[in-house]
Length: 240
Image (cartoon, rainbow, N blue to C red; front, side):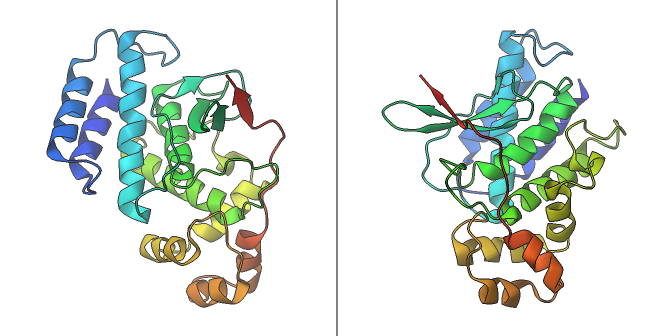
């Protein structure tokens, strides 16, 4: 299956300290030997479950290489298919909140899984516990789409030329698309510096500082787009 070759190639490229040689070797062995992988990622086989975990682990390592190591929020590396319209980060509420990636109802192929896990892995760097109360800057979503689009174009499009069903490219009037169009103009090393300066992409709360960091790439309207809050639907936690 072509997606497995993509994962093996990405694994070799990860360079951050979260991925020592033994971790890489274990993941490589898991990918190479996973039994009962099916063409439908929603099939609950041991092989599919293993590959979902390996995929998210590798993509999180890749996004950390670009933008820096994530914060200390506890996250699960085991994505779940649930009946939500869109893929998203949910929080399991127990003794300590734990972030988990939920794959939405429209994700049906391994390539669509790859796209959505790219997007959600960016959010796992600095998960926002309660997006109903927090003001999440649109830069967070813009960078998530940028990362997903870049990764898909580089690793999936050479053998699968369809646009992912969840890509904001399909919805050019959406806030996500407008944020992506601005964020994609900012080089990745500059984005890493922005995250260092503000602590996270979701908290761009100083207009002059942000303008200074991005004025070489963005106009005033684009700066305002990326600083604006994202409007999310309600119900963002799962109680267990």
